[in-house]
Image 1 (tube, rainbow, N blue to C red):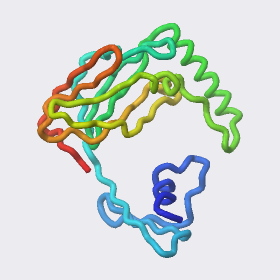
Image 2 (tube, rainbow, N blue to C red; image 1 turned 90 degrees about the vertical axis):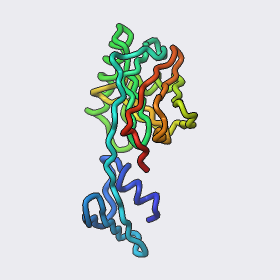
Image 3 (cartoon, rainbow, N blue to C red; image 1 turned 90 degrees about the horizontal axis):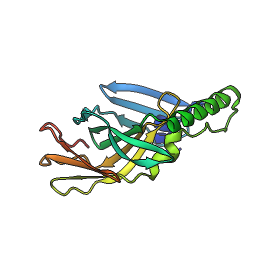
Length: 195
């Protein structure tokens, strides 16, 4: 077992994967000792740190662009140890039809899937990654796309895009850029970077 295997076992293991043989013990608030039998030469010290997520003010959803025959909305921007941009879909007949088709496919998959069969992709997973989004601030920080997630039966169009680094302490305005324009957000004083 190597370091990447440990990260996978702790954070990314799928429901149908058995956990590695070993033990996890809490040492202190947010500090854990991890000992796997497949790695007799190492133990792992895992620290979990809670970082507050600050939601930036957005009075109403903003249209950011169109993809897959539906309009995407900016519904939330948050700052923690990253900048998180959240998209969802504008209600429309096309969005409702795609949602119904996805939910039907999800039900078929849930009722009949076997090991190794992947669930159907939510409609937002196909459409929204094609919408270019970028982030800037008033002090010139270079934000880079760092990953994202989204979809699922409860929110099939929802998509989160994460950008790093977090805003620096001297940044006062964050701007999200998208095909239909841009939206500027004031950054609160307590928006401090967290490692």
